[in-house]
Length: 272
Image (cartoon, rainbow, N blue to C red; front, side, top):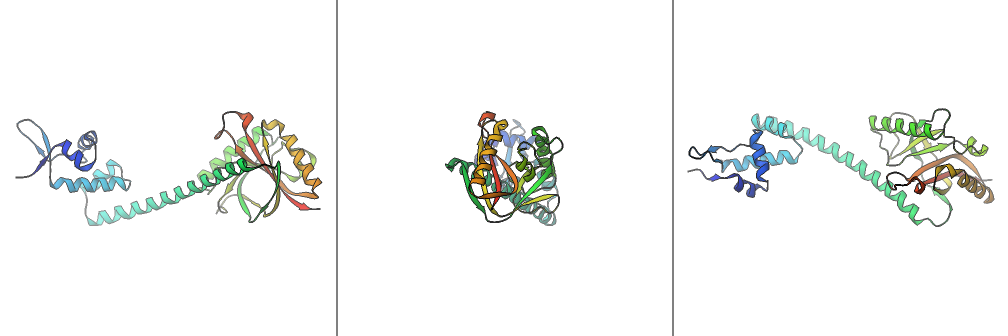
């Protein structure tokens, strides 16, 4: 005589809910083998427990119910090998993507924590190795609207081409505009990259000495911050040697009010 199990008993054995088992039954993924002719009660048999274990393994490695149903209806060793190899490839790709996201989060956290630790208004720092940026030109008249549109285009391009970018957006003000005092006139929007991209236009941020400071508050007032930074650079006996790199540190992700936004400005400098 076969041992019979109710849906409740199988639910306890498997850790699934009764609702899930009923749904599997409805979708023809895992159906009770026996039906009592007297009361129409439905029962699972002992040999079905192993089948359910196989279904749960397939679910754990990422198959949809439809894929599980199709495989279980046509399973053999050859199909199993093909299926497992395909899932192995997908899982490796997911691991790679999750590693990329983890690096992006680490970068974002690092920029926020560095801002929290800053006491001096201007810092002189050393960039030890070249950094790479994916860039998008800002169209005329090169103002705030145009740089926002350039960032949107750049994000779309980066996602379409799978650029290994960080959760950081920014823009560049050319050296010529810095020298002429046109601080709200942007040349490029950028996304810092983990490595140089295999295709597309990118910019190298050279290693060396940089002066950096933070602008906090409405962006329209950033001219005052730039003037303070340039005066400091000159007073310390340096000259500017690169465009200004502006990084959004506190933005809509981290604060509700635009008055609390923070922009980090970095400019490469050289001794006169």
